[in-house]
Structure formats: C-alpha cells, structure tokens
Image (cartoon, rainbow, N blue to C red; front, side, top):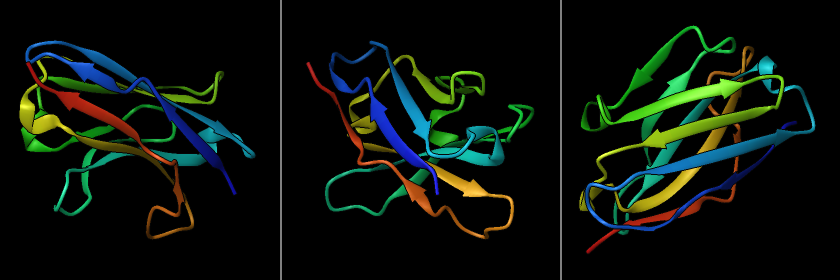
Length: 119
C-alpha cells in the first residue's frame, strides 16, 4: 500500500498561483495512476486532474482546464498540481489519490491540504 502526503496549500489572492506536491512512500509511485481531488465545505469530493503512470496521459475537470497542470516525477515519487489564475471557487481541501492498475477505484489517499483563495 502506498502512503501519500500533500503539501503546498495556503492562502492566496484571486489570480495568484500555488503548487501542491504529493510525496508517495511505501511502494514505487510509478506503479500507480495518480490524481488530485478536492472537496469544498458542504460539497462532494470531486476529481480535479489525473495522470497516467508514466505521465503520458492527463485528464482535467472542465472548471480547471487551462489553469491547472498535473505532473509527476517518478524518480522522486512525487506528483504535482500547479494551479494558476486561482479563483475563490477553487477554495477547498485538496487530496492526492493513488490507484493501482488492478484496482477500479482510488484506494490510497493523503490527509489533504487546504487551499483558500480570498482577497
């Protein structure tokens, strides 16, 4: 089982940028499909972006296309989410998640990192 730990959240003004990191340990992260989810207060957890095991394919939620970029560095067992032009509606707890090739769902989760976009 892989263990995940997010970092990089914080308070930023609208239009600003943040980069989230997710460090994986326990098993080689390259064995996993990785993703970022987010959950705003009172709302369901939703997919923000996901990336293939080799970084060769990415998928984004419509609301973040053109603003967010997911990337991975398998040598460092780390996944990143670069967030630009942040909006107040991006405010949420962001979670890193992992899914093995044999699993139908994401079964490894980090503890989450808070992102607040406010002036």
